[in-house]
Length: 130
Image 1 (cartoon, rainbow, N blue to C red):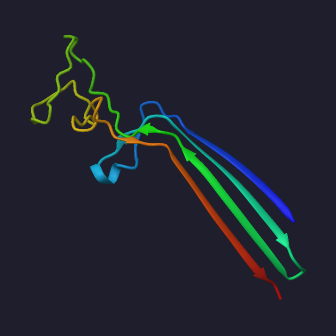
Image 2 (image 1 turned 120 degrees about the horizontal axis):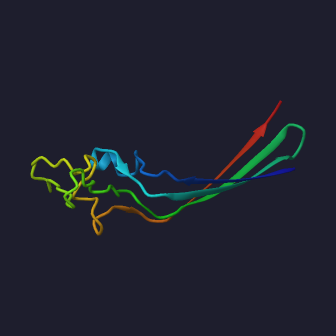
Image 3 (image 1 turned 135 degrees about the horizontal axis):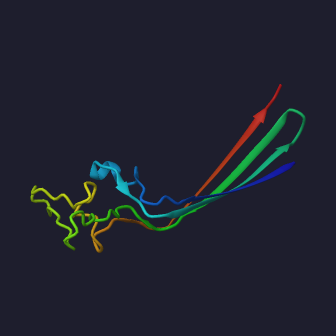
């Protein structure tokens, strides 16, 4: 019998990253996601009962840490007057506003957040060779 153990850690660390998240399809646009950690571990057994009969069993467990899915900055002061002019959905020109900023989901208090998620799976096979 053989026992295999695999451990994998993925740390999604992207500064100023806008891309595909869990809410992209819902909102119809790419969103800015915070940094988060995905960690998984696998344990597998492979054994021979006889020369022609073998089995395999595998288990997986993982964790995604909590992170915000919408987190765009409102913009930057381009003309140096100390103000950031935003359109607030009116359609008025707003040269200081970040074009990816959405006043419905990006301000503090309205951001969409992915809660911590624990995921797991089990699989197995039996095989007969002749």
